Image 1 (spheres, helix red, strand yellow):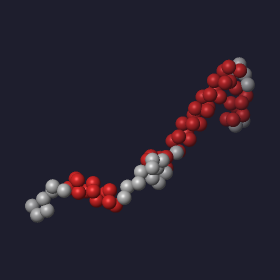
Image 2 (tube, helix red, strand yellow):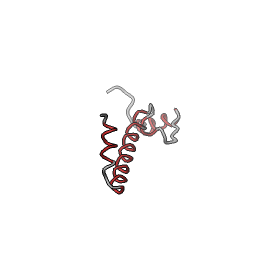
Image 3 (cartoon, one colour):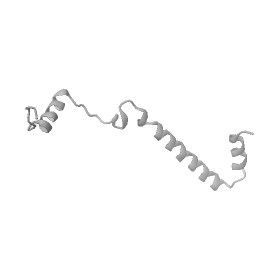
Image 4 (tube, helix red, strand yellow):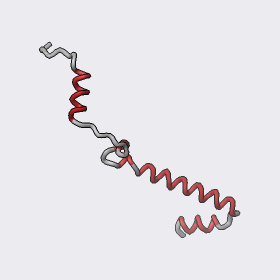
Length: 75
């Protein structure tokens, strides 16, 4: 007997309200499993859904702001 058959057999012995509770539990577990598979495996990571467009000019400006006062001569 497979696990699916065993669960179906045992589930049939429960009252309807308990069967609904089991169904709700299974649905939650499915959502958790699907959520774990989602963005974590996306090549852009968790921020893939965000509409962020960083240009070379943005990076250059950030570098200038961070390193603008850094001395250029050798130490």
